[in-house]
Length: 328
Image (cartoon, rainbow, N blue to C red; front, side):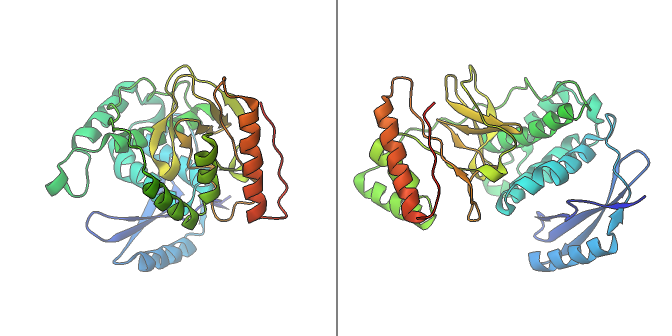
């Protein structure tokens, strides 16, 4: 019997030719391969409206058959629509959809999920780095920035990790590939005037209190939406660099002996690299978790002082808020 897709809102993206394209899955063939229909428009609003009419026309689709030998591209689309898209912000979806529909699926989508190899992934990432830029090629050349290649790598890795969890494959073929080295940037120390401008901007974006806490106590902190976390939080210290998607879906990683946290869906923060994008707070957040970090030699009094200041800032913003804290 046919059924409604739970997250079948379709996807909208800006094409390289300047037109907007909307795509919607309208069914699946006997092998589980997704069948899609597309709409094109000059503006995003027009595209969204056309896509809405297309969804209404194809309200029900045949049940999706998830199986090991399905095409990797179909698995990526299924994973994004059902496991990823519902938990990320609309502003982040654009980045994910670019990595998936502009790069990963065209490059690897034809390969059966259970036949995808590390060599396939390595070749794809190498070609993406050397010739993957889709816009401004005349001024910036064909090469992709290493940060973009790493972001695409992380999205593919998450999709394959889910395939392992669902019993479709036994190991993740993208693990162990050689990524382009991160660009080295010289550390810059802010002047007093730059700090003032920074805090003014932070206040405009609702992050003033947290950054002020760090500047006044020299203790790092973070912010997460508890309702977006998947299961319990585990604090751990990695022995190697572990990749994850940071704020605004930017590629980043933990560091050896870093203080990190993860839930059932992956890493959500690093003391050094910061918060991830999936659980980062947004204007609608109501249950918030603030990790405050200190090194092993940090005196408890320093952490307690930071926690008191943080609670004070919270109470100023939300007088009726209930605050709980503990030191691990």
